[in-house]
Length: 637
Image (cartoon, rainbow, N blue to C red; front, side):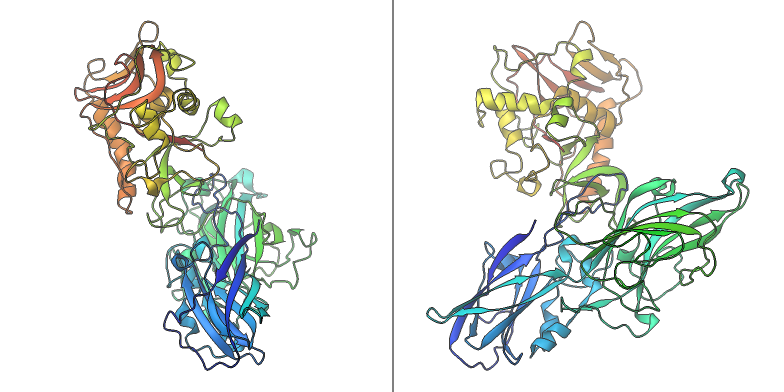
């Protein structure tokens, strides 16, 4: 879809821009920027599903107005916070004929712009894609919110009102390059010939591009100015950029065949002798007894070699446009099958038979793109194997900064969902909130005792452990009881987590699409939190399977383990990883902290999770409905 952002540029001369001498009648202009919004993934986990990014985000913008001779009449820069409700304005004059816009390029780059040619000649630097708002050069990872864009449009002036307008279609100055899979097909596989990938990175990447959507490719004269992303014992020591490489691959990506998504953003490159490549690096062995040799498989983007098959906008053997040239606003997706030993340094090319076959898909960067992406690098971002839910409804194993867009809002505790939730479109998992909606030391009641409040009651552990329908139970109370802060308050605070109704939680607001929103977990979901995050054994130490509504891990049954402490510490280790990145978290203790579930045992009792102080971790449906317990919401995605 195309998101239309209305921009009218402010009447003052902000950002220290000096107004040139202008001729003609003063005119107030409004511009509409048509931003090329898309959906894409940004995740370090090759096994995760779609992660939605915002590759059309306008984090900052510079707008220039020019007369018929190309001389600047007005110039203004903006950050996203200065664009209120999508509208800003700029003063020019009746001599203005053209508007030019550059997005996600630092405004200081335009300090000396006097003409339209000057504006178009400003070079966006790829380093700025490694800062979330493109305000400065970054080093570790690229951001979908920082992709440079540019556009131009003639303006229309209404002389009767001294107003002007233009619609500027923005175009990305980068391309997206994605590796979607690696496999091997060695003739000598039976004798142990093998390859283990250790790193994926870009090579010969142009460092800059012009802020000219029609002709953005900047000239790079010497090889010393090209960027690369090799991090582990790099062949080149200069112009190395962590954001253009994965760093050392994890075990999942080293196991072949591998399918996933390693994605990088790169500027266009029309240099036919120094072509942009994606490099697969790893250990090649001739047999199981071979110690192995580090080799590279350089894949020139948009280049036909023996064994390469093109799909998309080109033919089966035909590159898109000029062979080996990459353009801006294109998506280059490729998968590789390795069939022989690679070369010994990344600058080499294959001169005889090609030891890798490639399937390459080339398409325009359309507004309907939807694919998983691994945003290099993995090594530069905290990755502990835990899956995190992000603020835009997507997920992955990396922890972005707490101020980033998107940022973490929950920790996944299950990768399966109930049949009912799958029917609602939430088939990927459940996540628990980083903080409490109500602290257990404060506590609120579950509801009113004496009536059956849920459609189904659970009277044994054998049944309640299987109940993963907290959303269904929460919605039933929402519909039949209309919870407030004093009426069925546990449900009220869970449902309102992430809003102004629950203080301090708005940072963790539920995404507007793709998830259930926050709700009170079922007792079976609390069980999954204990098992999957708390690392409790699935074989609980004792339970009321046939005669009681409870289950426990208790050192009185199996001496020697403080189960609530172990469970709390294991969950807290994940939360503390988030805390070190700036997130506000509420950790757990073994001090008789009790948390309500959405599940009911009978007319007088609902289930709760108790981190006891005498070695017992309990799921219990015998404590009534009115005690004051804590609320820790969950969310389906």
